[in-house]
Image (cartoon, rainbow, N blue to C red):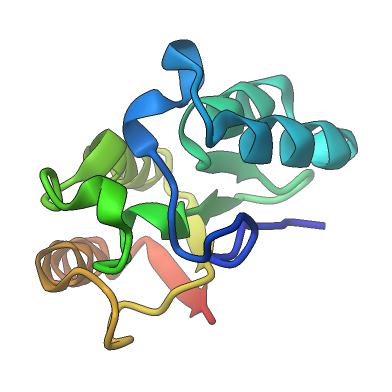
Length: 149
């Protein structure tokens, strides 16, 4: 089982203070803490920690060379008022994704990217969507599939 948050997990919808999670704590941290604890049985320890810090994780499917990379939907939404000052790459998720894709390419792994909000979805940050699309294109021989619904 590989899960991912949706943009309606908290209330009000689409609102998630990415500047106050992980080591910074804050009002949005409860979403990550409770979800990570619930999903802990399916996480590796590295994925568990990554999810609690940034709501992302990367995990090799056991017995295969398939890597599951899950993205954080909250940092993509233009309707997230907490991000109006930083919509380029909140939490450094695109930098993290690029590092994960590079490691997978070097190891000859196949990658499945999962998430809740598709890049072409209207309320998504267009700058983020363009950078994401460029990464998927750059690593087209590594990214086997994206499931962003």
